[in-house]
Amino acid sequence: METSTDRIIQRLVDAGFAQEFVRASLPEWWDPADDSSSANTFVSLLLAKRLSLDPGTLLDDGVPVGFLHTGVPKFKHMRLTDGPRRDVLVAFAQGVGRVVVGEMGDTPQYPVPTDPVALRRDVLESGRPHVGFGDVLTVCWSLGIPVLHLKLFPARTKGVTAMAVRSGDRHVILVARESGSEAQYMFHVAHELGHIALGHLKDASVIVDADPNDPENSPDELIDDEEEIAADRYAQGLLTGNEDFSVDRDGLGTKGSASELARKASSIGQELGVDPGHVVMSFGYSTGDWGLAMAAVAQLPGQSAKPATLVNRVLWDQLGPAMRGGMEESRAFLEAVAPI
Image (cartoon, helix red, strand yellow):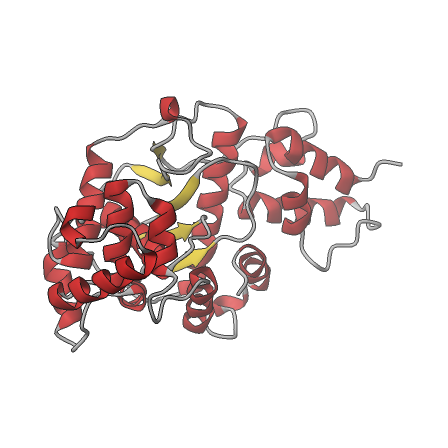
């Protein structure tokens, strides 16, 4: 016998959400056997808030589930036409952003400097040898911009790397891709910070970035534009002090050994005040030899292979053990999508 819970789940699946995701989004206390109208209304309203859905459409079986978008989304390095995949992804990003902003309470958010080199100088003045993974996270949080790694995703959407979300007058950075090194992850976050700093979200609700080097993206799906170029330059300026920073095989003087590449990157990184991992990633980008780059970065000291775990650990350290404002349901959802 079909229950109201079954109908809610099926309607969301029909709207484009993965069934596993919908079930994980239901509150832990929910009893599927409770088929009362009041219980189902409460759960429907809760899901509508979490997933940026029009609550009226979720409560009415006679109409399609509608989405509540607060601005035009932008898709970078990918072509995603109007349809369920796009609606679901944008709604999810906005829902998570809204929950995180709610968790931040009265924590202030400060304007992000538009000059990445000046921001870099602020970091280095504290005595740091270079701007590293932890420094980028610290910069974001100190500006009131939370960063979290998504470990629960609403649907199969190929190639998504990270998203910058605007929720009201605040911003959140969501990372979707499990990067193999802190350096690679660091650039993704710095790139999203660039979008925020440069005002690319002024009239947009979310920017969805995909990696053009991801094998799941076909060349004919890739879209690049001035905003992407500007965000890349911002990240380079923050991480290296040079928005045009690039390292190729000749510049490193290496013939292809991973150990040699790691050694050269460490030397150049120390000389230029640049994270050696970023030197290696720049080598991978300029040469396309990502196999060698990933093998080399694994040999560098201090490069965690699980940056996503560290990102979410910082998230929960910053938010603290208790929900601000007593919104336990929102916190439970955030714990499901961004666990340590």
